[in-house]
Each structure stands twice: as structure tokens, then as C-alpha cells.
Length: 430
View (cartoon, helix red, strand yellow):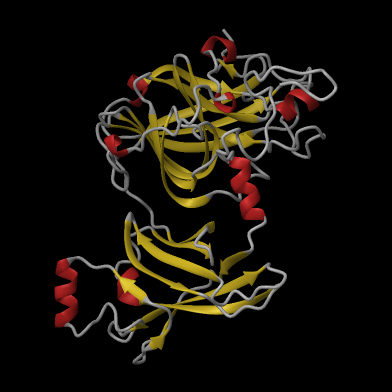
């Protein structure tokens, strides 16, 4: 790339320029982060317990559609229940779930009424069970409360058994959706199971992750302090590792680990427990924050839901925060299920296969040229700990789609400098 002063530099790996868009206007994740931060309208929700009104009720709101199977419709007809009555939220045994929302308008001159539409839908597990839309009367640069009423039987007939999420797609008058949001209404404990030894699908590991593929900012601001190799054996002189593994009654392996850095002048942006997986495992599905990588200070473009990416996807690599379950598999469904509580998982592609890491510590990426406000981990900063359960599975577990249904990778370019392939020998300390 040539500059106006006659100098230039090579676009090589992640050492080139970056911004919001690629040359063909394909967005970088930075674009979606900025889009969320500067959204012209957004919604927040009161997470206090739902109010259930047991009195006979008809609320005249925006059009509402409740999606049922044929059997559910037949049962509803017998019980005198209705899924849609001329755009009114009708009675389901006299019960209605009330969601207290706050709609915010950032426009300087535009009322949201008839100019911005909040399309919403509710999912239980992977099924959409209710949807609708509204356009609130909200003056410029203000916020207003809005009560969203949904038939109780439509979404919470079995509240303890279904992962329930309220989603919003916010659209302007030109039909452009400029913001996606989601709110978890119910997250029950899931019951997983596996069979076989997970280590049979691991080429090397466990290993200690003691760093990451450096960003341009880290190459500049931490010059001379980045680790030469950031995948280390369990027994090493740089990061002390204590790992405990025990079998579970449901066929899994419970793994708990503690890492303590023991180097004084090395910037370690991530600390975790890693494995180099079987090269046939080439796709990841997860339940948690997505669809992009996320870090402290850069996570607002993500939202909770079900996500799936092939290893060749432009947006595949990086740390993914807030993950409750991840299913890594080959094209036939054989693979590993990793389960925990709001885990940080790093997906990294190499010439020998995927390196999957459960991180116990993650630093933010910071600005490009200024000194980062996010800490790395050096001697005296530990210890850090995490735990998870891993299962070997032969097909897609409950809540996950078939491995064959994972979307084809999004690859708009012949080469992708943001996700350039690292040689395993260059990141693993021998």
C-alpha cells in the first residue's frame, strides 16, 4: 500500500491497515460494533420477574402472530384459545406475560412513531413461538416506557425446560435493519451426555495458552514484550499449570485448571487451557454470545443466541465470550461438546487443525496506536482459574443442528489478511 509521501508498506497478515470495511465494502466486525454503539434507537428490558395478569384481557397492540403446530392449534380451539384476533393480544386462559421495555430515541429531529419499527420475536430453544412489531411514540433524544404483552401459554407453558430468548430487529423507514438485540428470559440447566474418551479426538494437549495472535496495536504498543510462542506444554517455566480431571456420571470429563504466570516482562493477553484437535473437526456451533469474536471493551456487536461457523469463515477466529455450550465436529457430526458457565472460548485455525482454548483470562484489544488500558498477565497477576465439562459425541446434541446444516463459510476474498493461517510450529513451543 503506497502513501502520499512516497513511502508504503506491505499488506501482510494482520500487519496491514484496517477500519470498518474491506475494499469491496464487506464489513469488518468493527463495523457492527460501531453500528451498535451509534444505533439511532434501541430497547432495554426490565429483568424483574414477569407480571402475569390473570384477569380477562384484551390488549390492543401491534399485529401479533403466535406460531403453533397443527396439534397445538386443535387443542387451542377446543380450549377456547385464540392465536390471533385482528391484531389483538387475546386471552390464553386469561393469562398474559408483561414485558416492561424502555425505548430510546437518539435522533435529533425524528419521532420514532412510524419512522422506526421494533420487530420482535420469541424463541423457546430453537423454535420461534411468537412475533410482532410496534413503533413507539418517542420524541427525539428521549426515552419512553413500552409494555409488551404476550400470551402466557405461547412462551412459558414449560418455563423450566426451554431456553427462552426475546429478540429485536430494529428497522428504519427505508426498511434497513440497523440493530439486532436479544434478551435471555429463561436459561434452564441443560442435561448433556456423552460416550467415549474425548482425548481420542485431540492431536496434542492439554496445552497452556499464554498469549494470542497479536493485533497491530499489540505489535506496536507491546513491542519486545510479546511471547515468541504462546502455546506451551503443561510443564513449563513460564506459566505454572494445575489441571484436575475427573469423570462425570453422564459420560463426560470435568476439567478444572489454575494458571499462574511466572514471567515478569512478557505481555500475555490470554491465559487458558488449549488442545490441537483432530484435523477433521472443522466447524463449531455454540450457544452464547455471537456471531463475532468478543473481548473486554469490544463485545456490543454480539448477542445471545445459537451460532454456527465453519473454520474457513471470515469471522471465525478469536475469543468468544459468554459461551454456555459449544459443539465442535466434523461433517458427519462426530466431535466434542464443551459445556460451562459463560465460558471464554478461543477458536484458532492452523495448518494442522483447530486449536480450541478455554480461556481463564482475556485482555481487551485496545486502540491501534495508543497504549492499551487493558492489562496483560505477568508475574504476580495470577492465579486465574476456570472449569468446564467435555463430552465426546457421535452426533449433534440436543439444541444443536446437524453438522451438515452448518452454513458454508463466508469467504469473499481469495486471501483474508484478518484471519491468515498460522503454522502450528510457529505458535507452539517445542
